[in-house]
Length: 365
Image (cartoon, rainbow, N blue to C red; front, side, top):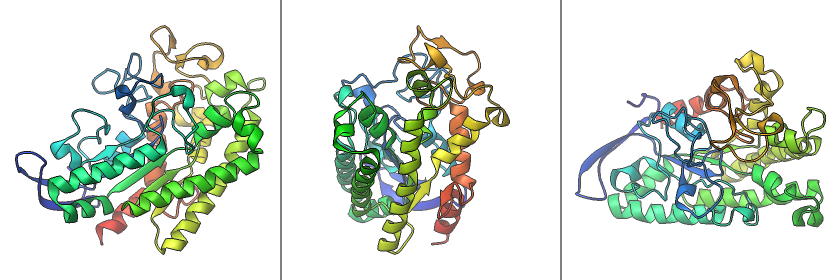
């Protein structure tokens, strides 16, 4: 049942099939981005960027892999519960995404993508950001055909949007191989500026498509994930070059978001300082109930940081003791800590306000 703060009733919307009268009690939720928020779109694509086999999903309610790059729930699942959704938005490519499911929202995210179209080319067939936005336009047409353009516009404008993208532009593009094309083309500071300018275009497209409340996450501590410790770390320390990339990128992202809000004249875009959120438990894992923040629960090699998480990998017995589930992705417990800060974090974590404040404010409009 939706909480009073998050409830907004769109009464008697007609479902796509059968003209069934339904009531939407929670705001819709749309998700864009990469593997941190992909809930299974890549299951329906010919790509190597997949999480549709065990032990992924070992702690998911069904105990089975779903395409989420997690042992259990991911960040969109947890945010969805907080805003009153009884079910998570389905992956847009799911064959079950139709009828009343359209009213919940949709997940367009695809593992491997970046801000740039050439990020993730090694994964071949993924939903790059321009394609995710095209599918959002297609979704809006489907929704309008179902409930009418006026109600569809209202649902989209009152929805919450989450976009998580950018980390792969460093890990799987600029630093993918020594002397990569992008690293020869740009110095790191110039590459960051280029990414920010391209990201700004994506955010403005979202705004023009009707998004009015958009959570924008920064990157985590890129150089401290188990994969980078295994490949580029220095005697157990984080990769300084990737840490430098994150330290350049995240403040400029916040500055760009502030500029967009000033230009629009309202707080459409909300920045989530996920680097700081991650750093809290990376720097002091014991304070958050973890035994380690450098070794992945599932993987192989140093720090369990090499290769993919598969049935042949080392697998920890208690996922709640690990900050990282696999070489790149947080465990469900770490995701819960991140969402706690998104919901109630101070201005150091959420700017200009946290999600609880947004929900309270929007409920009065």
